[in-house]
Image (cartoon, protein in one colour):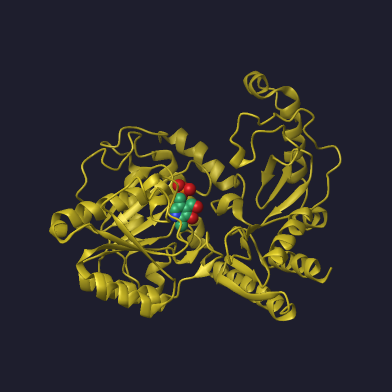
Length: 456
Ligand SMILES: Cc1ncc(COP(=O)(O)O)c(C=O)c1O
């Protein structure tokens, strides 16, 4: 059935709508098995005859040019079709955020039911609607260690993307430092080399940008998993350290797994000098059987940042979970002026429930991904150095950067949408982050596809 709503066809054009509709019908009437057989192929009868050009979009996001048909037309679950009608298996969950793939029916229904029930998209943050409070309470409960010791008892919700939540954490850390140790000199943030905590100036400053513009804040980068170096830095700078930041799996640095032991040591170092342990779970969160990763490895952060997966690619929402001793900002110091995003919070609650309902599968499929990649690393040892990451957040590190780039190019050509980290000195890794809809069959397909690319 063709969508004929006047408004949508007026805003998008009849032809664009028809292409989207044809793609949707195709995806809905084909089983996973049937779709897997067609990955990489152009699907007959589906193409956007008038793709919108993207001249006004920034070049760094592929803009500044007419559309070549490579852009997203329509998707369902783990599959999507491009404007030229090519079928892809998305092995990275969009941009690492779509826990349940594209437009999961349960979440779409939740949006409709929520609105019917009176949940608003947004309202003033001083009068949060029930879903915001429910989500805050659930996240705080999940953030604490199973032994009942409470290190997290506050949640700041209603801040759009992960960057804003990370920036809020930084401000709390600075304010707290200023109050308690401001006389000791400029504060220091200890971060991991290759960190990524967002796109505003402050969070980019942590990874070396804008250094000449921000002053009186020092950043010391340490190598992930180098325990000796971490201890030396804490011994040397002691109470001048305001916080230690880490992402448990560094999805912006070749999916390096930061070892649990190392994070526990970082916690001890922070406790010894009064620094905040801040764990950025924007990537790991909502991809774990227990939603968050830190409690599962016995790490008790003062702050945990979540985002991306929390609302599964629906309305972006992030949260900062923290200890009440950092509850020291004034209104508008950190929150934006949008409110608590009640409907998005409701989607977050639904997503949380859905993740919990597949906790066993997360482990088994995650382990299958890692063992599949390890088997490739063994078989193609001449080109692959090792596997990296943890369960769904996985990387295949090549010995040569050219091999990683070539593999990435050919994988995308064959319809497997994956990412490559091979543009910085020493980086030579391809990455996957399959959504939680992926089952044994999907993983087998992806690994077999990789094997065939490595053989040819
Ligand atoms: C670990 C980590 N922190 C922070 C961010 C920033 O989140 P956002 O892009 O939603 O602002 C990202 C985004 O990829 C991330 O991976």
